[in-house]
Image (cartoon, one colour):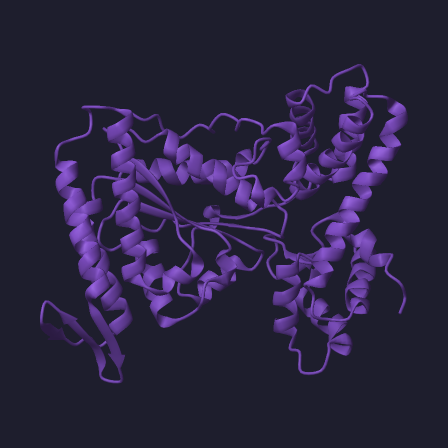
Length: 429
């Protein structure tokens, strides 16, 4: 039997040093080998899995949001790994990754659920010979049959409702998208009722807000057909508002998480693990680790980049932790950070003077936050023609220049202190 709640999976095996240094984009690495911290955030997932394991179905949707580089994808990888590690023939679990656009089609979502369930049954049968029930092959055959039927059904939506051609019969529905989605999930329920499923959606801020998507989100959130399923959405800082516009009603307050900087302890632990993994040890190791932790300011993206910068310096000097090289490593790490900030600003739609103005005013505030009202009045004179405030704000959130605070809501701040310093140092013109 599985143990609830899920403990964190063991750390991923570090890549060979030369590979890790080459893969400077953390998105290329796969599961983060030096993932540390996020205990509170992981606890949200653990409690949701525990609730699902006890038979509570529906209403447990999780939302993990934050600025670019906050470590959302790394956290998602840990959660998916935990699901995989705790799947057994007696209690199978499946982690299902679904792209945002796919949520426009209930049939496509259900086909992916069935395919991943069958794939997990095959994996368990191979890993635990003789322990997977004989009925699994029958379920697999039924799943393939249902997938074939779903791909061949003809759905048309007209002003008069839904015309559905199914086995030669036509049916009408007054609320076509919702009824269609519920029907598709109902058809799949007998195949999925004995397997726990966790649906993961990355880049969830890109979910299209359409009537069909609203119907699918309703099924994932409330799950009226008793499929043992819970959904976890990972996205940028406005993901919750996107999901709410998409019809996700009342997400549980304790399952909406905004990822912020890591604690100093977690930051130093992460950098320490990198040095230890690649054998950079010596009497000066603590000095190096603490200096790099300060430089990163606990931001996951920076933890990786300043560590890469330092270890490249060390490799080019024979691996010696000479303190005379530390300043050189810090300067290299700062260049990595500045490059990252420049990259984020490239995604911005407004003149840089606007973002500099925000950073200057934010720096004057005692709590370093700006209310929506203050932000609106501050930016109004500087917005480019035909740009609405909402368009500016969405872009600023997606570019990582701003993030919304949870308490109080509708207040905004620059997510990384050194990003504010970078903006304030921009040229006047």
